[in-house]
Image (cartoon, rainbow, N blue to C red; front, side):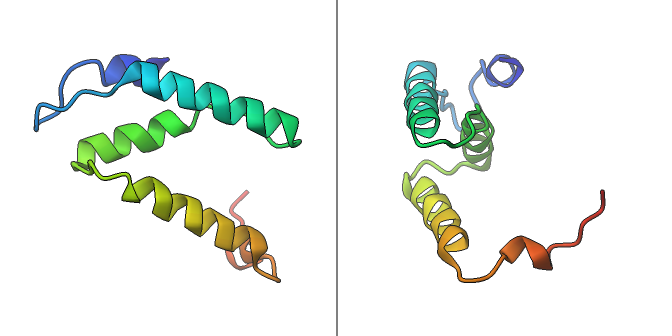
Length: 87
């Protein structure tokens, strides 16, 4: 909710975040995630706000993110084993 409040105003280009669309997509993704045994969350807002601030208006950013996550998921080795563990 704090992320929504931070982005209530227009960005530099005059774009506004469509809150109804964002909340609908978060709800749908949470239902699908819950039905398939995944984790639910609202991190999608962070991605939307990042894209809005960066001036990215094309849906290609979402497709690229989804494709990257899919590739990481189907790789035959654990990608996270190569990321340093600082905790």
